[in-house]
Image (cartoon, rainbow, N blue to C red; front, side, top):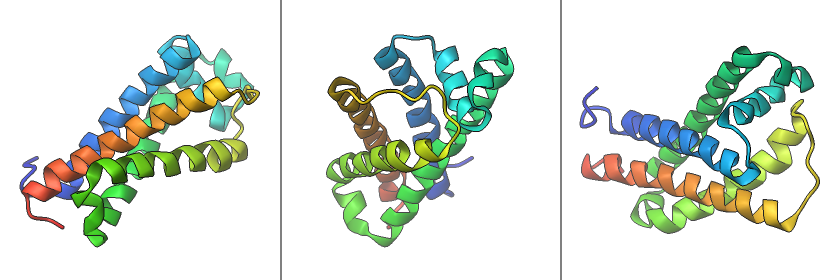
Length: 155
């Protein structure tokens, strides 16, 4: 695919896949567990506790779900930036702000409505670590939006 011909799609794919993959690694580091278990935990959003007994199947499902969510999150940002040029012009600030929004939506809307297991108790340390990870996520998405759409003159 030629990024010059499809700058928004390129930004969505790069931002979504890269931020989503890095997010898996960040979750593994934050929780001091294997990325395989992180992927099973993501799959537990659909499967609940049995996700941890389904081996590679649930890990693969977790990867697909992670990338699907990441692509959706990136698409929302890229399409919003096309309507609000300020997002692309101030991509660092916008990316951090978007990361905050994503953090709160994921942690206080999506996860509570899912079958995710186990439910973790609130700690300031985990709150800050996970918030930081989402700030990085938002910055990555905003970077790729700026990188591909600005150069292509798509605003």
